[in-house]
Image: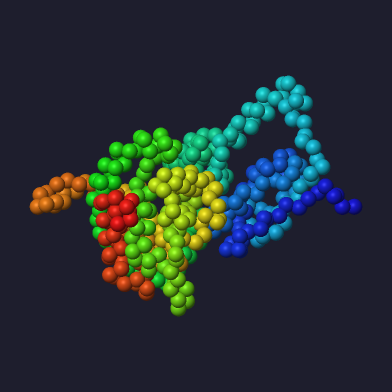
Amino acid sequence: MSNPSKIEIKVPQLPESVSEATLLNWHKKQGDFVKREENLIDLETDKVVLELPSADDGVLVEIIGKPGDVVKSGQLIAYMDISAKKPVEEAVVAKAPEAPVAAAVATTTTTDVKVMPAANKVAADNAINLNEVNGSGRGGRILKEDVLAQMSGKGSRIEERVPMSRLRKRVAERLLESQQTNAILTTFNEVNMKPIMDLRNKYKEAFEKKHGTKLGFMSFFVKAAVHALKQYPVLNASVDGEDIVYHGYFDIGIAVGTPRGLVVPILRNAENMSIAEIEQKITDFGKRGKDGKIELEELTGGTFTVTNGGTFGSMMSTPIINPPQSAILGMHATKERAVIENGQIVIRPMMYLALSYDHRIIDGREAVLSLVAIKDALEDPTRFLLDL
């Protein structure tokens, strides 16, 4: 006789652009009691990590989907008995002398700190006690690098082979697609960052007090890029077969580095956003990107991308276009250099800019002039503030 209280746990409906996902580690074991809305397991897509919360209280009676399994929408991965009640805590019924012994055993094999899946695998494969590992991740999370550092400290010669994550494979596919499909060229220029830096230093405290977020540099670059794209709309266009699609809006992708790899969330209608709104959104992307909480819809589309390699110290690079976009702006590290102004040698904080573009639809003239427009806007911010 079937048990009407035994319900199926299935993979949720994935977005149209995502055909499958990979199961990561279960947060609950078979036989565990689960509360409503508690996360059961993470599902990794080629863009983000999705959580699968429990729809009800109950006991996880059978786990079918194993970590690493590739699954599709609606696929059965577990059963839950929603009629089962939360068991009485063992600590209440355990004999007094036995409790300290159980606790001592537990502390030698487990850790209260969250362990990332890759770190857990390396530790298990090499018999590393996670209680002896110091976590360097957010909130003290133990990363794979922390386990490897612990192992190297013991004099081991480590060699590890791990499969690419779904996100890493997707990034690799898209970058290869971009290089094989687009006729990529890159034009360079440099910008004097002093006007922006002076403006930021003058107003950063008042800005943060009013808007609750720090005033960075990325918002100025987004505004300058939109200012230039309005003048040269082909850089905001994309190729669709034998057609050029001109977009009447400016959805700017912001490249964000995360522990899982690079993601590019989108600022929708950036032309209508204020400096404060852009900064708040970018800060939010950065925080949620670290935890894999950026939504799939936020990673879809985009008409132009801005990436900042200068965060990691890059002086010069040739960014790769993010398909189906046709251009991407690369920022780099700001360094003091000697430049000539009005016949005099002066020291200025200078940044190299790089604009990669698809030469199939963008001529060198438009690419060079658009980068000059970005440079001019940054060196005189009143240009995009007054729409000049």
